[in-house]
Amino acid sequence: MKIRIKHILRCYQSGMSIRSISSSLQISRNTVKRYVRIYEDMGIELERLLKMDEHHLYELFSTETDNESAGS
Image (cartoon, rainbow, N blue to C red):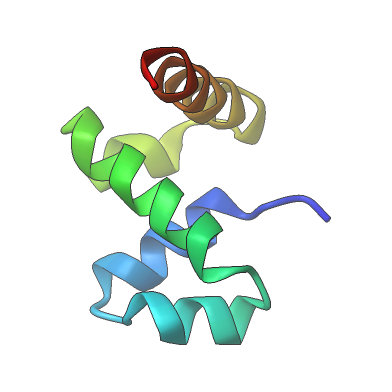
């Protein structure tokens, strides 16, 4: 299943809770938390992220996830 990063971020920005996003998109809460944390740590405006194509967005979030793993 392809994780829909843009959808997660839109829901989060609209005020949905992690639990609600997880339930409505049928994605684990830990996955939602991870993408939200990465988004917040990046400090990039949501509109800028939403304009990116999916491939670039997945690369960006994968790089951030890899960096987290390396730092642990």
